[in-house]
Image (cartoon, rainbow, N blue to C red; front, side):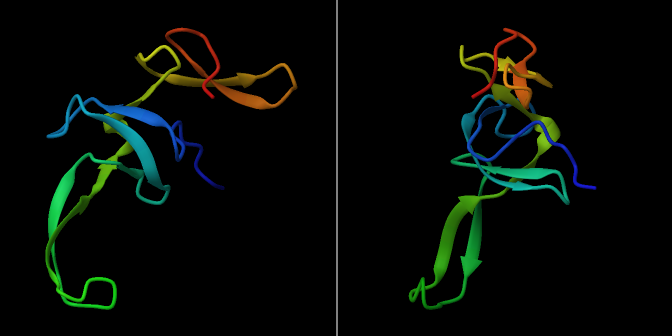
Amino acid sequence: MEKRLKVKKGDQVKVIAGTSKGKTGTVLVVDRSSDRITIEGVNMVTRHVKPNATNPQGGVIEQEAGIHISNVMVIDNQGNATRVGRRRGDDGKLVRFSKKSNEEIK
């Protein structure tokens, strides 16, 4: 059975722990197997790459690294970092909602 995570690709999130604490960004990748996500512009690391077709020069590049899902909180429509719940919407489908403002997320 697939894990049900509170964070989805495209969500705005705020980092609440670690070296990137306080930064916000958009979720680019969600890795369900290791409970890690990649956030745009957050947790930047340097990588040494060999020359290849996409990078013929090679060298040192900076890119985003994964961060554990427990170290982020979703930002709701009002701009607050909040926990996320699930409930039935008006159409009978499950929707995510902000526990802080009690509004639907997206």
